[in-house]
Length: 285
Image 1 (cartoon, rainbow, N blue to C red):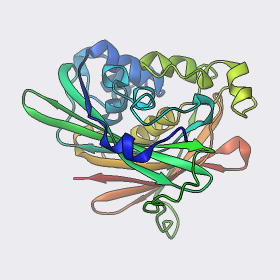
Image 2: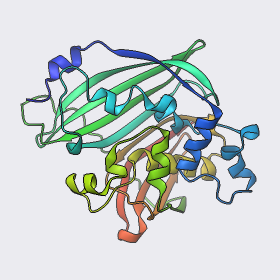
Image 3: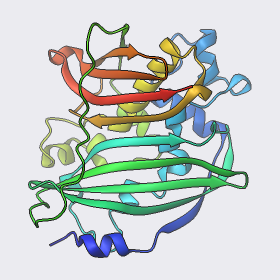
């Protein structure tokens, strides 16, 4: 079996130094659609270095995302076909606001391996800390199609009870035709998001958008709409990737607000509101 759960879980963590600059932050923000309108003072907080604050989801690509998903798929006990890999979900925990530039140590390991029958799920955990202490923890849930069925632990369900009642806010975000090509410059070079032939091999009609790009677009909408544009209020952010997004589509983001959290559901407008993000929650101060 290409995935040896015991070997993967026992593997030594991989640590390495990562660094990022204001240019990296600016590029990430542009990759998730910031800067429209270009002269809007609220957008300039994302696009002008003299006013720059950092959207917390930048943590998923800081240091070009290393060690990240692709690195984790080369861990001992893991030998899989990249065309069978899908990003199933993402959880980000912030320990303090992200600096606009910095150097830190990222330590990655496989925290769990679950058997879902038709697929295996790898939970890849990355802890990042700098000289002042912990910065963030990222958990990526990776589905590997066709690699389940060995009788292992199925793991917890990621599904939440859906929000009730009408949403407090609904916004729409139109994606660029070249959104995936721009976003991938932040470090996710998976050809699924750029190469038409590879996308067809993976079962898609054309290249799809990175799930983490939709993840960033959604967090920005929540921060700008319900958190007063204050990125420092975000404490954690979790989602399940429920469907694909194609560049050029329009995202409809529904938000339900409570005292300490925002629930969200995201769909693709042009495909009859097909769900793309589910079980999404932003915990905040």
